[in-house]
Each structure stands twice: as structure tokens, then as C-alpha cells.
Length: 297
Image 1: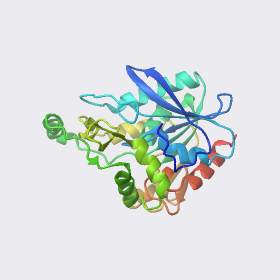
Image 2: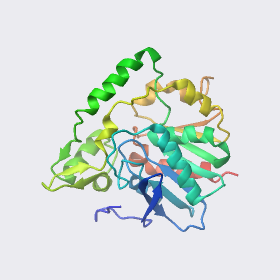
Image 3: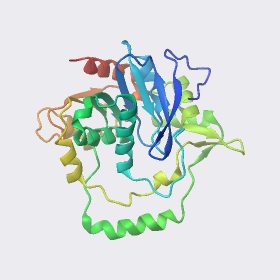
Image 4: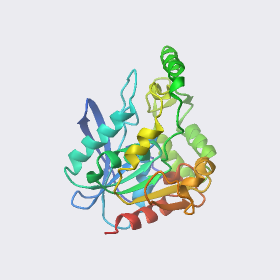
């Protein structure tokens, strides 16, 4: 983890590596191992270190882990393709390392929440409670589009573009704040230092394999996701940022008067003054709500 001097940490992180299914996985750890386990799963383009603000707001003693998914952060590798089921299997292996055979508390954001939501239905015996932060799946696809989709994936694979580079970390921090104005300047600099790395010409580039930008070779199958969600037995807290772009599209999912929730009887919470990056914009509110949810028997 990279720690800019202008951000004052309340809880000191540790960098740990594990060999997980052929990948040297980087995992951020906070707290003592004898405390209850809390697993934090980041979204696309993010990294585990971004949960530092959330961890700093926790009031009770936890053993917190936040991996960098394969191809992101310090779990960097260069692949020709990434398959979503690998993330589910990676999570299962990670839980076998930290809490074998037992139930764990999971909090996932965006892509990480989608991984956790599927996992909670595939292995309901391994999930105690689940906080889903803006991870509501994708729109269904038409199987008739498969030929064009496969072709697009193959053709774009031949001309992979690199991630945008930035003059320095401050420029990236400014870009982060333009996207999410609620993030304070010191936190934006912290995030920039962990999202990116400096290269030979002095510029900084994102720590993420550009292959992630390719369209998925296999189209999203909503019915399969729903079949997994139907098997979830853990209590669920659905969290949405008040200002998120997803708010309108998924309004039906957080309206208690509707009966079309994709999860069975979840609690719902809208966090004010937050967009999609809830854990960066309002970590205090998210931590308070999540911790209250996790400590219930």
C-alpha cells in the first residue's frame, strides 16, 4: 500500500501476498487476526487499499482483509483475457486461507459486490452477512447478439489501447475529485497513489491490466445470476449512493413497496451526499451502517 504523507491513518495496514490459483495475490490486512473477520471486495479499476477510509471509521475490533482482484492493484498480471468466474473461485480460495469452513462477513462494492452476490448463492454456507454496495448485476443480453459480440471481442483484442497516463499523481487526484467531488483532497491523493504507479517517463498510469477494458467475450446471462441470488441465505444490506448514476436505473431494487427485488428480503439504505464510490465519498456513513449490520446475531 502507498501512503501519502498528507493522509493520517487511524489503522495501520499490512501488505500480504498469497498464491491464489496461479496469481500472486496482494491482500491488505488491518487489525489482529483474533478479531472477527471482515472481507472487503473492491470494484472495477479500484484496489483494496481504497477501503482505508472505511476501515479507519470502524469502532469495534475487526480483522479486515481487502484483496486486489487479479489484474488490479498490486495483484497485477498481463493476461489475454479475464473470466468472471475466476473472481468467484479466487474469493473461495481466499476464504479457505483466512476462515476455512466457516461463514464470513462480506462487503463488496460494484464488481466486488457482484462477485460476492453470486458467491453467496453458490456457497451459502460460507457467507454470514453480506453488504452489497451498488452491485446489482447488469442488463440482460440477447443470445442472438453472441456472434457479433464474439467478433467484437476478438477484433478489439488485436488493438488493445493502454490506459490514459497522467502527468503526476496530483493530476490524477484532480480527475478523481471531478468525478466524485465529495472526496476530500487528501483522500483523493491517497487514492491516486494507490490506483497508479510512476513509469519510466515520469508520468503515472493506472495499476490495472488494459485487457479489462475489452468487452466480455461471454454475454451476461441475467437468468443465471438470478438463479444464484435465489440461493442466498445470508441477510443482505443493499446500499446505494444518493447521487449515483445507477439510482434511477435500479430504483425499483431499493423501493420497499416493490416486490421485484433480485435478492430475497434485503434491507436497503440510500447514503446521502454520495455517488457510486460510496466507500470513498462517505466512508463514515457506510462504516457506521455496515458495522451495525454485521454485529447483529
